[in-house]
Image 1 (cartoon, one colour):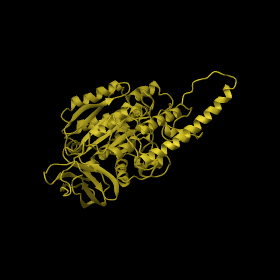
Image 2 (tube, one colour):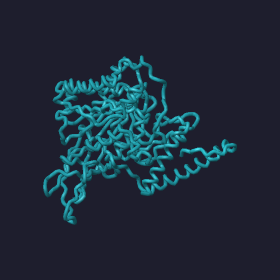
Image 3 (tube, rainbow, N blue to C red):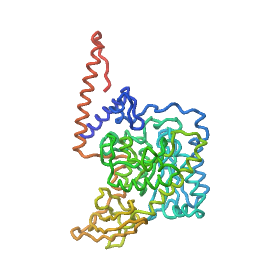
Image 4 (cartoon, rainbow, N blue to C red):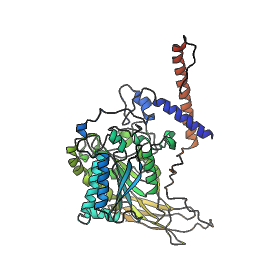
Length: 484
């Protein structure tokens, strides 16, 4: 109860900051006044970060209704390799439709799954158009093009063209509540986003989706500058430094697969090879990319695929062609490299949802409950010790040398003689407590430290406000309400 009360007070404090006359840093940067550095990282509600998009500029882009028609048309045209489903609705009730492409859409298989997400920011609509082109290309070229056939028959592709249809309709970065959805996910350092009541419906939909599906990797499409971005994990997100996560080599490998398949991304003069570490470029909190990796076991890249947020529609075919092979090769890398296999129980022969770890890398993934299959992305050209474990069983380890092709490796775990019974996991959610009625918690020691700092800030803020107000109330005896 005490913790809940402290969390409520914490949110009231942070919301009071949001009412201050501060312009939030839309992309995690800072302005010349220095106010963004002081307050911007605490704010998810953003002001307009660019001039109003003109009607002329929107010509040639699909409206939300036209996008839905295009999505459903793909399902009608290629019903044998596609499935259309919704993961939820936006604030204004627009369905978040997904196109699943596979030779067995809708069925669970011992195959890796990849998701593409577009239009995270409402004023970056290029991803919507590119992802519709990707779905149409796979639909048209299955059994005609070897790469299309390889992808469709060996994995499941899930395509969400728009995560933020309301922001697109409003022609602004945030959603209908003016919240930047890429700052709205639970953060490993700051508990502000842990409260489910303050999380946006689009964010909840993504979290629930990741929990239900067994995604191995992911990419979100943005637009501003031609480069692809790796991510940080488990490091402070507020200083502009290179922070490599435990899987830094793997993320760099994946980013280079995309960059080197692109028309000109790898030629970038600003970023070597066309890629950069997320924290080094600009730090953020509450990002979708980090949450996918930490809580979903999903390797996600952020892809910046155009040199303008809202380019003219005439440029869209060129942008699609420049990114087509990059998107296909990135998706195909799930089955072309890494280590893949299944985990079984020796006593029954049944698959079990065990944990898979790589020695020396502080990151683990869980095999699926249905088939006990796992798919672990790893950078090729290295030797790895792979460890499979599960409660009630004795762990097993083996060493592999990963070259350019994927390695298949199954594990059969023996019962731990010290346990009479095997305690199975409650659900296959990668240790992610992201049910709608639950919140993410950080360690109590960290929470107490944050709360102490914020209480001090609150006291200073109230003291300053009281002294300032006293200058204007010396002549008035009436009491006035104060909002804190």
